[in-house]
Length: 102
Image 1 (cartoon, one colour):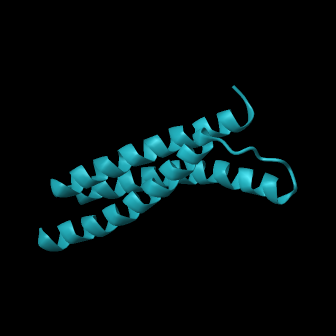
Image 2 (cartoon, rainbow, N blue to C red):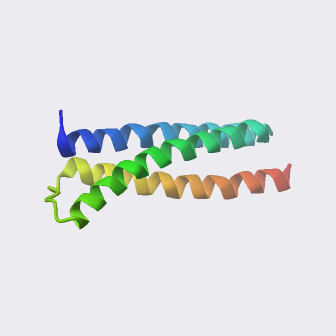
C-alpha cells in the first residue's frame, strides 16, 4: 500500500482513535468524571492533529502542483475527519452542559 491509499488509511485510523476517545469522554462526563473526560478529549485532539497533518500534507502537495488523485477512499477519509471534528465540538459543549446540570 502506498501513495493516496496509504495516506487515506492513515487519516482514517487516526480519526477512528479520535472518535473513540470522544465517545469515551462523553461516557465519562455522563458519569460525572470530568477529569477523565477532559483527558479523553485531549487524546482525541492528538489523534485529530495527526489526521489533520496527513490531510494538510496532501493539500500542500496539490498546491505545489503535484497531481493528487481523487478516490472514494480519500473522500471517505475526508468525511470521517470532518464528521469527527464536528462530533468533538458538540461533545465539548455537551460536557459543559453535564457540568452545569450536575
